[in-house]
Length: 373
Ligand SMILES: *Cc1c(COP(=O)(O)O)cnc(C)c1O
Image 1 (spheres, helix red, strand yellow):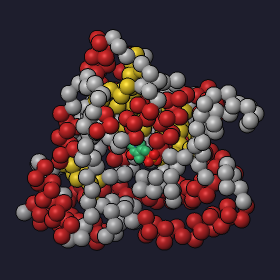
Image 2 (image 1 turned 180 degrees about the horizontal axis):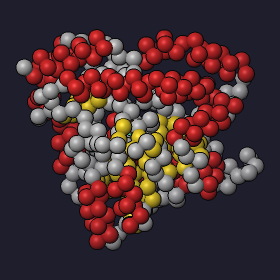
Image 3 (image 1 turned 60 degrees about the vertical axis):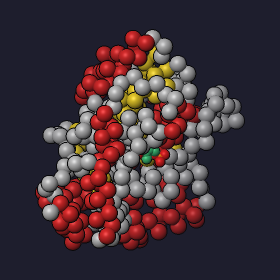
Image 4 (image 1 turned 90 degrees about the horizontal axis):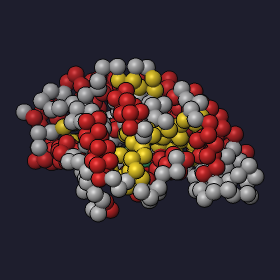
């Protein structure tokens, strides 16, 4: 059994993907070919946002947003302590200071009370300028943007949605990657919508930021390509990846999102005795991960070992909080993050993907239940 079976997905989409790839190779337009613009238009329409700008990966997408906002030294950016490294890394890379905030035990997403405490602590200290919040849609579930937006407005902070894992999720029918002032996603192969290498995208309704990101992603170009008006990146999405994503986005919207939710539903209805993921009312997940919470670290280790003995892969996302990362050992901690630390010790993600058969999910369920008994 595969944790996320990309080979099976390829076999199912093979005809269309092979055709898309050979059309690009025949065209010779490998950089910024027509597929890139077409994909951006489809993504913007799917998400329901005015501008979509593709780029080289999900980390660059976050960096491009911070650059468009001019975030740098002396600025505080609030970010969950329990996330993938990129969410916090990009803040430090721009010279700004990440301020780690705790998450909720039920949804794994940012805890608004902890966010408010962190903002208060930064203001009280008076050294950093609070500038932005990066809210992560962890494991496919959108963060609670109604509450987060209220805080952002009250505190005059910009809101960046890190939707690297969230693409396809929704709140009250509104799609993920549309909730931030700027939102981003990643097309890393194992994400809900993945390409065959690295890729990413930025979403915004703001014309001015879209123009800036268009410039930043190609070496800070001006209207003339050889007139560079700012320092930027080389961060484009390859035409080949765009062509692959056009096929994959169609499959994602037509069947995969629905299919992966069916697998999650089978897990939810049969896994008793462990804490299964909580999807709040009016929220939907795109199931980047299906993540259990165990009683303690010993139980997690024992379950993972037991699953392995039955050839069932499982993963720990994430074993280390941001505040415990070696690279952030000198960062100041403004609030305690006990839930993030607890989750790092007790979470375990099970195999999930749209093309997982009922028999496969049953094998996983039976193994977890027999472990618990
Ligand atoms: C994967 C991921 C990223 C970075 O995406 P890349 O395409 O790998 O650069 C950023 N944030 C989160 C939450 C992620 O899971």
